[in-house]
Structure formats: C-alpha cells, structure tokens
Image 1 (tube, rainbow, N blue to C red):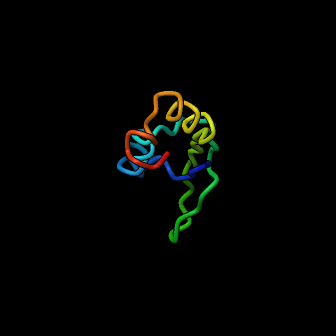
Image 2 (tube, rainbow, N blue to C red):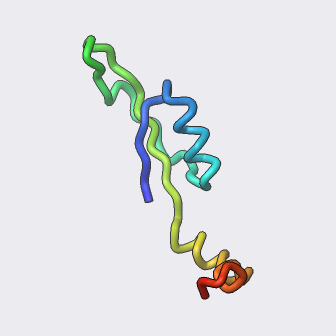
Image 3 (cartoon, rainbow, N blue to C red):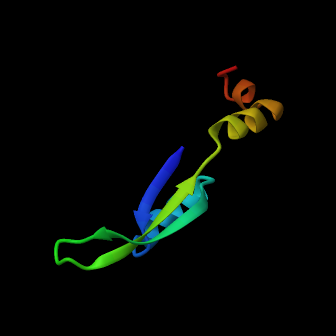
Length: 67
C-alpha cells in the first residue's frame, strides 16, 4: 500500500507511521498549492502481505475469531 502527502501534514504522517507505513521517497517541489507555492511530497509504503504473514504467525486472526 502507498500513501502520499506533503511534509506539512505532520498529523497524517504520524498516523500513517503509527499504522506501520515507512518513508520510501521524498520528491522535492512536486505539489503546487492554490497560491502557486511548491511543496515536497512524501511517499510512504506498507507491506501488507508481510504484515498479514506476521499476524498469522502469531495467531492474531484466530484469537480475534476471524481465522
């Protein structure tokens, strides 16, 4: 999974990192706001298959009644 946001979106970045997303790239001056100001774009990713494999290995799905 991939998420993209500008660096000034500190709360969103913290939320996604808390969900396991990790920074992959920083693209300079990729987003232009309404006033024409450029902003850097942060690309975060999350390996969902790996997350699910770890969850399965620990029996989380079964413990929650979903396995």
